[in-house]
Image (tube, rainbow, N blue to C red):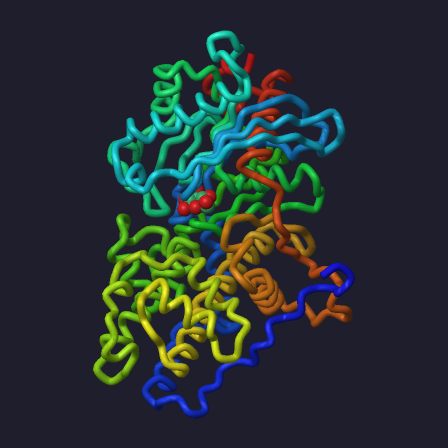
Length: 493
Ligand code: BGC
């Protein structure tokens, strides 16, 4: 392909519904009404979002937690040192060794990934912590040799769940998200549990910072790009972090922090509109919530995040199949389709990526994965449903980004984003950018190659490099005598 320029866009022209049965055409129209969010609604959601961000920072609080993270400076690019980083995401566990080198904004990284076994996500807390400690131990043994002989290594732990942090080395889990449901952890400080497992396995490391993936993303991206103001994750879950001024965080007023000092806030915006005031939830969103381990929580996340996109799609298909007035997959064995959470967001990505007019790849997918043989009009309905769900997710995501920029008064900045949906879901970036344009009333670009005033860009590795940087920044400030938010000074010697 060298020299041929960028890959041409898929050749598919869109719905060929001219001869489709009326019932399917009507259903497509109905789905379009349910899932389409127009500009006015995007603006309404964004404005409500701005208020909710402020409410979360108030003493009384709101439904968005807005957790202070005790990350109190931007990286300069001159941080140095070697750190371990442990990343507990929704799907994988990753252990990294990150070396921040003498060269500005440069780093070396070695890493190993471990899949979190499904049964651990709803199992016993001790088993989870032991599994994590074992992975760390294995990593250190492989890369450092005899663990009995090495000095304790500083560790940044990326724990990507909502946790209140009175200190940077403490995290009280507010609630599990992303389908985790492990008893005895919610409402508790996860650090002593984790440290107990490290001690029992003899893992030579000391926890220097507990961080969220969004905070890591913000810091890792700011390390290489001074215009970076917001870090986002659009993956199994969704969330964002940004820098607030300490003086604008009423819930920390009692600490008398210098008002101009920055404080990274982990918004936990997945909880936006849990009270159901503004988000246009469909009956499918309501079912997802009702059948989830934590009904009434993470309302925004459940409409956007990778964990739910495939399930929303599946619920639409099941609903239409069951409707007496509609013939969808009529007479076929739909038993596989009836299994909750059997389709993940990569299933939707594959449908949206099908470049062929006759949707032959989608047909293959349905045959192999679900044992269903859709007709051509059914394939058109499938494709349109995937587009509607994917587009809604991207447009809603843009409301969160726009809300932070409005709250901060940023008219131009970069936003670092990571996560499987952002990186792999087709058109997610372009749809999000289009929604930002509508919300923030930007004029059309003179040249398509020009940057938008606010650009959402692929981030640096937040949970690895970001965790190491935060550990380095924390060590640096503790050594300089800034002990705000440090619970265990002995870990910083
Ligand atoms: C979690 C956040 C996390 C996000 C992205 C959400 O479910 O609550 O802490 O940042 O997923 O991983």
